[in-house]
Image (cartoon, rainbow, N blue to C red; front, side):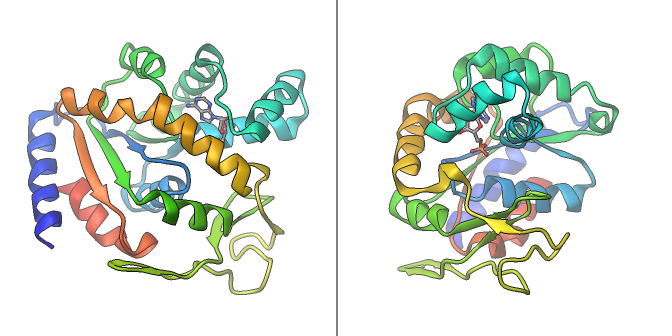
Length: 241
Ligand code: AMP
């Protein structure tokens, strides 16, 4: 608990030092599988602002079957990162849409310093939440993940109990079926163990430096994940403080 209070104090400092009049523009940092997408969609619903997930943009393009989608599929299936120019163009284009005028949450973007620099030219980030979780827990959690192939809603089959980490599974009401739209639940091609290990290595090399990057801008709020989605109340408190 002491840790949460310290985090909340840090976030209060962050919030008060930023331009309060601007709409909330925040992003979630964290390794693959830490729950960025799940937390981001819940926080979005609570704050009434959209989440822009570059992973979702990539998957939508793949689903459309365009030439660009076929190229993206190869990169995605290996667990490698899409080139900075292409992904930045896709993200910035999406951020032009009207629904982002009142603020937005970024999930999975930026993932490199070059992307962060490009983003900073167009949008001022008020808060960068860094979700933290041990790597072996991440691997178990991510390989147990299932997503709706229709709407992208996420679920998790794993029950993880390790020390102070207690994560309940996030199960659908009906086996293999999405609660939201009834679509089929499937494992993402890049959620298999080999690909996950590669994604974690790419994360450490390319994305982890962004923690220091946003810390040096005074907008970083670290958040240790303990109970998965049940940590949401503390996360919302951190964001709103
Ligand atoms: P995600 O769902 O966020 O894990 O993203 C799935 C895949 O999309 C990643 O493994 C990358 O291939 C690609 N991708 C998503 N966001 C980015 C980004 N910011 N930079 C580069 N590649 C990305």
